[in-house]
Amino acid sequence: MLEVFSTPEAWAALLTLTAMEIVLGIDNVVFISVLVSKLPQEQADRARKIGLLLALVFRIALLFMLTWLIALKDPVISIFGKGLSWRDIILIAGGGFLIVKATLELHNSIEGEEHGSKSGVQAAFAVIIAQIIVIDLVFSIDSIITAIGMAEDIEVMIAAVIIAVAVMFVSSGPISAFVAKHPTTKVLALSFLLLIGMVLVADGFGMHVPKGYIYAAMAFSLMVEMLNVMAKSRQARKLAHAAGVENAPAKPQERVAP
Picture 1 (cartoon, rainbow, N blue to C red):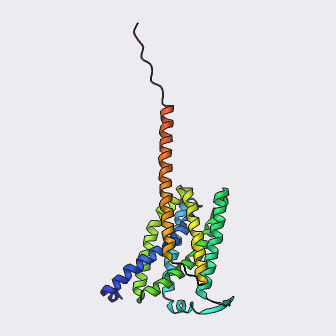
Picture 2 (picture 1 turned 45 degrees about the horizontal axis):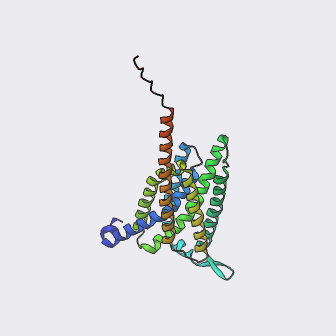
Picture 3 (picture 1 turned 120 degrees about the horizontal axis):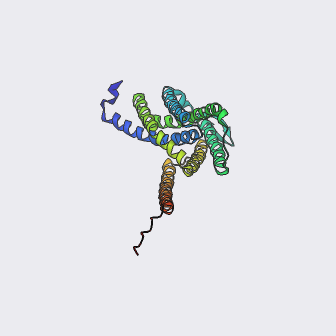
């Protein structure tokens, strides 16, 4: 098995595929971060870890089903003269799920509606895990089909997937904490998910949108949001300092000798 990594070509494929898997995993991390932000801290961490573990399991399991995955590209039904494969159907369904979910979450964030109560935390946890499973499957299909097109050896694919999920695991904690701390970033993340859902639906119908455009737009929006967060933090510090100066006790006046 390790003989595969004895050639420079294998290492080049590993590095390239790992970078691609990390980029594709950004969507997965953002979705999980938004979902778990509604749970208590302890359960949010557990749901995040379960979601990423499932992402790893699904990706490795799908890698061993290469023949079936390749067959997913064969048309099985026709809609308006357009032949759709199982892969297309999965992408359309997953994209539609993302669009509906992101739209509902955006509505709830803007309207300020709460999801459930303390008595329904366990039920909410189960629902969130189910949603993570669904979206993990969708992103795993897209990720592994990309891996099949970029590498030939399954050992290289498995190594790249494991490294990418490890990076996702390390980065998901800070991302989740940041999203929970700054509500405006949650709206931005949901907007990303809405955009990604539309891209998945378009891809399912054969209208491929280069991912570079999507990630460039996401990076620019994120940079603007970071500037906005820093400006708000600086303004908050100024207000706190001004309030502290106003509330400080006045110095006693010195008595002048007659």
